[in-house]
Image (cartoon, rainbow, N blue to C red; front, side):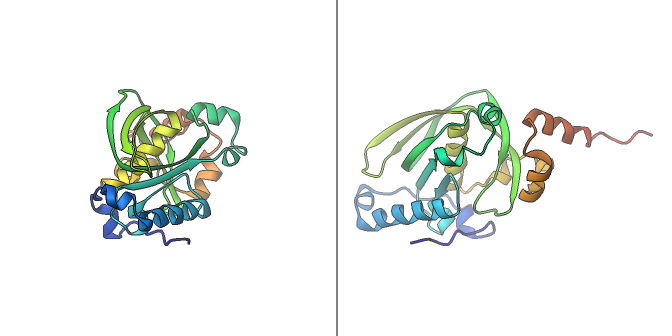
Amino acid sequence: MRLKIVQVGEPVLRERARPLSMEEIDSDVIGRLIADMRETMYDAPGVGLAAPQVGLSLQLVVLEDREDWLKDIAAEQLAERERRPVPFQVIINPRIVERSSAQVEFFEGCLSLAGFSAAVPRARQVRVECLDERGEPRIIEASGWYARILQHEIDHLLGNVYIDRMRSRTLTSLDNFSRYWRAKRIDDVLAELRSTDEPASE
């Protein structure tokens, strides 16, 4: 069943989500929710969906970066973003235990802020401790776009959205992103936007 994705302004998106108990993880209710969230993510389409985005303040995320979604992206852009397919996974009660000091910036969108995108600085690498859909402990070592997806979705569980971290001058409608920025390297985009912020000469 496809679920309604709530939009920025809904209080649930600003709450710290509660952890799931082992009893809940083993329940049919959570199993059904995972299936519904997966269907909703595919339908949107998106690469990740956190439970608060469907109105539930729970520490639960589904994510997948499907290979067929990457086929229309230029090889140099995939390389720049370090973006590779990520298989479907369920992440419960996650905690980022390590972040690289190196940060990278790229445009992000969000299913709960439909129609917009902005450049967001994120750690290039993260280490995440979590449980899977069976309640088994997992450690995820991720880099590049995978690390970005994890940080974006875990932010949702903490009551944060990407606009809290974005470079505000880069905020754009998706139409204008496609029109002006999609084909450009991120360094060129940021340099161009910075150049428009120079103070006027006397």
